[in-house]
Image (cartoon, rainbow, N blue to C red; front, side):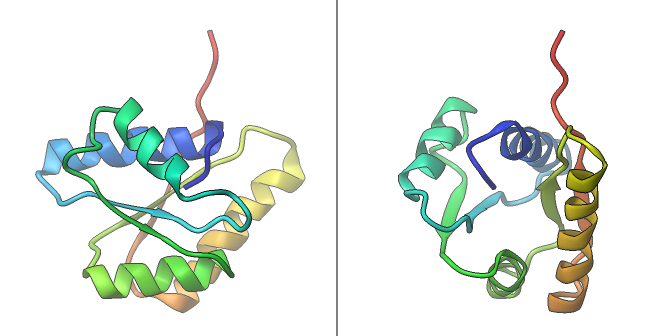
Length: 116
């Protein structure tokens, strides 16, 4: 997840699914160059800081997310969609495709947050 609208949409969707389906929530932060402490702040902002497990790493996002999913026995991976032009939407699909080759875990692309 990232500290932007895409990551926040994915986090909100993951929290809702976790609560509705009584699933364990593991948050993964894999964006290069950004301090992992933001993950704790975002979890706290969304009221799950005390119950969500947190993992972070640097490097290729699909590889790291796949590794974390395997280590944690994940049932579902949630990634955020980008509410920007056609090229950016293509990048979302590329990450989902890459995750498909890294892990057998289903991938859900959470819709972007809308303002208004």
